[in-house]
Image 1 (cartoon, rainbow, N blue to C red):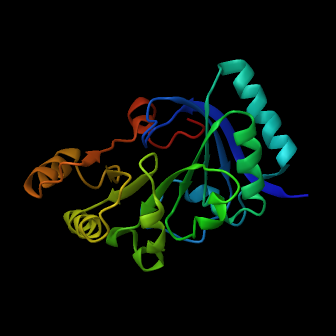
Image 2: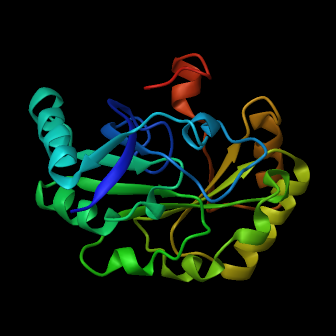
Image 3: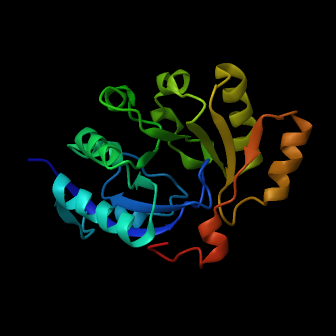
Length: 222
């Protein structure tokens, strides 16, 4: 039976993506295959990170409790990199059967096709830009697979990042929502807005991380 490395679970609002501001259950899993320079959840990826080996049954029980207590409709699977967890496809299927909208936050390096076979989760796929130092790991075959309900997210830490994001948008012309999100403390949102105007990015959205505005940027479990 599959057991997944659960670091934490909590109910809060989605801080980003198309469901920003909507209550959701968050299931955060340990481990990542990347090490982004500006990562804000490095603690979940360290070798000594404490986690619970949680079965599919245990995770669906957490979801049922959240539904009963908060009447949530969404669950966000995050990390780390959640798609590295053995049994993730079975968890997606089980949560979907509970009637939940399942959203997966993935770092853009993992092929999403195997997770689209049993059911249709919602993907928020990152494209790692130069400031992350991880761009070479991007699996760009994911981009044409993204539908209108999915999201392609560019986390930007510099003007160079913005220029690279514009190049990728022009090259792939994604059919999904496209978000530009600032690295907290590295670039001001106004710079992104001015870049969007200058480069006529009329179908792209600026995305601020709501949870870092509402709570302290380093606070966990929100």
